[in-house]
Structure formats: structure tokens, C-alpha cells
Image 1 (cartoon, rainbow, N blue to C red):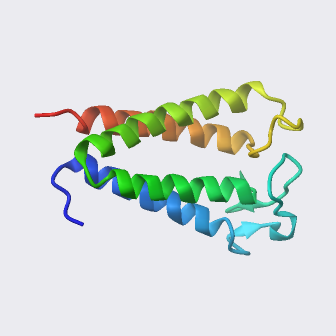
Image 2 (image 1 turned 30 degrees about the vertical axis):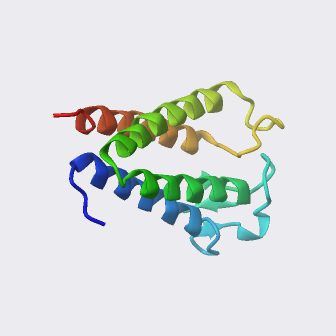
Length: 137
């Protein structure tokens, strides 16, 4: 795939990372407490890299988000929309993680404090990349 604009390359890289994270969430050893991996819910004790709460649903969402990034990177407009839209989504997830009780049924994804910080960084980073590199010449 040839990329004409930096925004396309960046969206593809972000997409590949999300796809890999989604896959790695299913790999015992990289995901600790793998025997506690459940479909969804706050009771899942599986941790990606021993830090980030994951579930089957969480892993599938990461993988789908990665595939979306790769598909949208085919055009500059799609790549910018992926980065900006993804940034907004992750900022919303960060806020969601701040306001819910991590031990409640509302934490169905699941998220923990490490996830919240990661979501903030991803949201700001993706939004910045999309806005800074996605402008038309």
C-alpha cells in the first residue's frame, strides 16, 4: 500500500498497533491471569502486559479498531477521520473510566486506572496527529 500523505502512514501505524494489541490480548504470558479472561465485565482478572485490564470483548474491539485504521488509511480524508474520530472516542472512554465505579456492572469493557491513563494519551495523541497531519494543502 503506497501512502501519499503522512496522515495515511500514521493512521496505518496506529491501526497496526491496535490490531497487534487486540491479538496479543489473547496470548497467554503476554496477558497475565489468562485463565481469568472472560467475555466482558469488571470481574475479568486478565491483564495485558500485567497492567491493562482486558476481556475478550476488549480485545475484539482493539482488533476491529485496528482493521478500521488500516482500511481508512487508504485515503487521506479517511485517515484523518480515523485519527480525529478515534481521538475523540478515546477521550470519551477516558472520561467514562473516570466517572464509573470500576467494581460496578458499568465497567463492562473492562477498564482500570492504567487503561484510563492510556486512553487519555491515545485520545490526545490521535487527535493531535489527525489535526496536525490531516489538513489539506
